[in-house]
Image: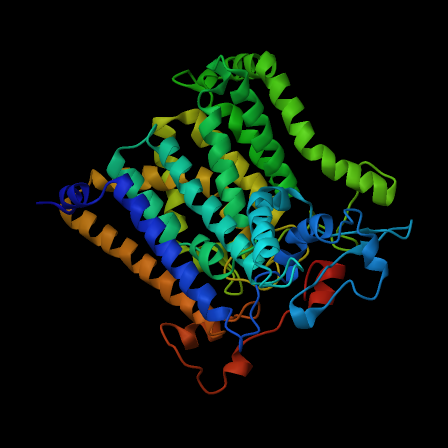
Length: 472
């Protein structure tokens, strides 16, 4: 019996989902319990994750949604894990660097924790005590796991169940989505993974749907996609091509213009745009109140170097290269060639969206995006790349048994490697921002520091990078 036949009997996408739920839930809970013991200084609400989250305690606990409390001496208390980061405006008011989209998505979980704290009175009602950290844990797990549920529904439109199972398992266990859903919770990437999966799923049929609520939901999802992380506005470019307008039709300029015209003139799109605007409006009102402008650039002196993007480094650097720390995703790129035969419109638009996305992403001054495991920003586009990964796996399934065996053996290796390197990152053996080829080679498949490790890593020059776009 061939490896493909064995795999088709063992795996199904439902079983894959159940396994992902069990692994993610168990690992996240185990690590959280371990790291919130009294002798631990670990917290999931500092740095970037703390900025995304801070809108909630500012609004519901400090009762100060306009952040006027930043003018007092009690704005921050790092010893208790309380940290509000914001920049002053010319008007003397304060604006956090991050937008409030993720806080909106975390709101139900935060409110549940807040009610629990009020009732039990066993924890400080600061917004940063243990129940609130649990809230963000549950929020992260919820959006990551149900992102896989929605992505499964999308992929089943294009691939057999066994192919979908492998795609889900590889995205969940062989990429850094695993790390940011279990180990380093509080970042936006699992949320974005969920939102884009939802947007694709709704796009598959919403233009033919007679119910207005589906158009409203589509607008809410697209609004959140932009509000959670504004750079992801480029991902909206591919959504029209998942609709029925571009299904089983020829690839030509005439078809493109006709399809886009039907999409843009659809009255349901107007409903979706209104819903998206309502989602973004609170952020605009906040900016208007704090800066006097409806649109405000909140990243201060940080910016893009579009004339000097670091695309090669972003993909292949040992510091944070996407394909170095998630090598399985190379098959998602190769698979785009096979996807061309299945759906030329999706292949073309996903490829173009991918190129635009990596250009914008790696034009950011800090192309490695600070401390973290791998190229975390690439998680946001995984629902699109899942189609390429599925096409590659489907192609291999059609090959000879020895090719199947070798390929799936390699996939298991990638899963093991990702799990092991996640553990290395936890030990700080795999450095958060200073890895080099020499250091990577020195620690490969090891669990202890070797002599001279400090000389192998290379700490980035953040100030020079911010000013010039390069460390050289």
